Length: 459
Image (tube, rainbow, N blue to C red; front, side, top):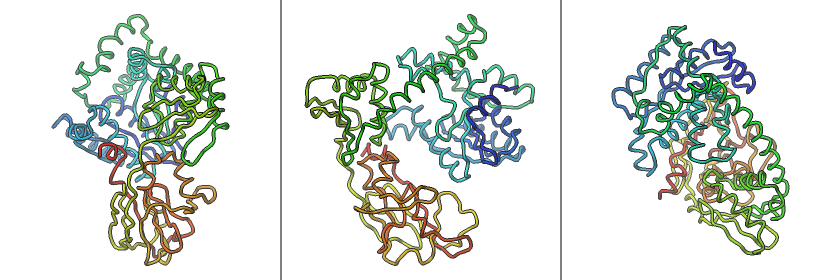
């Protein structure tokens, strides 16, 4: 059973040999199937993570207790996250589903870092993917959207993506596995639930294997889309940085065929550091027309304060939004926490012995590696770091650009420095030449984020 899962995990190398896998478990049929199936895979260390959204009262609490109890019996380490999603959605001024997803994935990423998990496995299946395709068709989408849910994106892997829900239920029955039913799944106020209850049965009556057939079609569409994206990416070589702005001769975009030009524009916008997810097809096509037009000073406003501007022969992509105020330089508290004003991070420092295997997210500096004048400050011209596991020394500015950190947030990222220069960059890593060796007395430094980009947008 679950032969498709075996094929998919092999094709996308989803299960790292000797590595740790964090399985997201709601307690429902799909996630319990995935957790049990992963527990039988050899050569991996398995952890389970459950996020309580606090949306269904006692039912939500029951889900968490159920998953915790099952994991205890199976000997699988269990991690619980929770948040008042409804209250947070109201605070952010966005939908509950969007907020729930953001908080859930933030918890999963954090737990993966804590456990050293190489991948996060979620239980999306072939039916989920077919429903996603139908929803995007109904709302309107290009080829990018019609490729459905990707089998792998960054750390997130989806072993059951080509497995139909019927086979998952059969697996649960064969293995006598319990699961919990989420009462909100029957609420047809949600568009996906209406598609699941009203549309999918009709399509299965036309083709009983519709989810499997759809999965095969999505695979072909992904192959086509990947090829077109690779062709569009070839335009990257012609773009150049002018400080924090991106410049390319307009004819490189104008001369591309219709299937490639908007994709090339999207690639360039993604290089700007704050992504291109909020740019619609109209925005992308508008930039293409700007490149093809005759107006040497045409301007197009884009989401998040970005601007596309024609400057004679060139296309300039820039950010008009003013940078946020830089953090206030603050001396490092060597025995506690330091939270500079206007910073998005807090730094915790304490004495420790460097362990044989340092915990993810904690940097152990030699006891003599930080001078008494150590402080948290904004980046300065010429700041440079050699980060562990990375190639060579780069300026802080280059590290930030390569990681696509939006320009307006860069002055709020603390640089830990002393009279000898930068010792660490929050969110990136320490200067490797200052690190302690296992068994040495050290300063244990941890940076944790106390404010998000979304918080800044709401201010």
